[in-house]
Image (cartoon, rainbow, N blue to C red; front, top):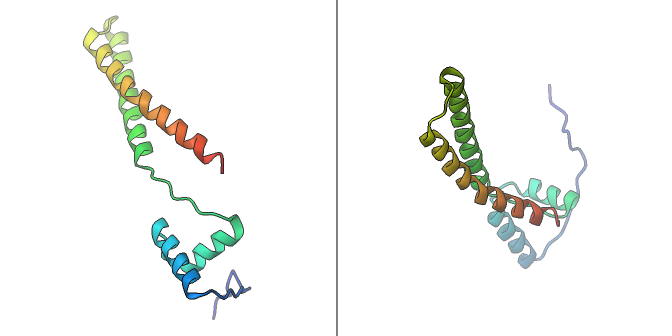
Length: 115
């Protein structure tokens, strides 16, 4: 039993050698290897976007780390009625590392929203 194609319509486009080279160059630049998927995306949306998520991953890691420290400090405060100064200073240092990453992420999102 053969499965029917989801996309059963075709669209033929003829390109010069230069245009085809440019398509391949743009695909390579974006890390896309499927030409049909690239062309479909360009036809439907008019552009493609490659986003480096490494800074966001680092931001998420630091936020998790800080929230874990906050929970530990809250637990100690509830158990003993006090908080150690070193714990607060450590947490403050981690939060201060977060601020520039959040600012940078905000700038990048603002740039993307212009598209």
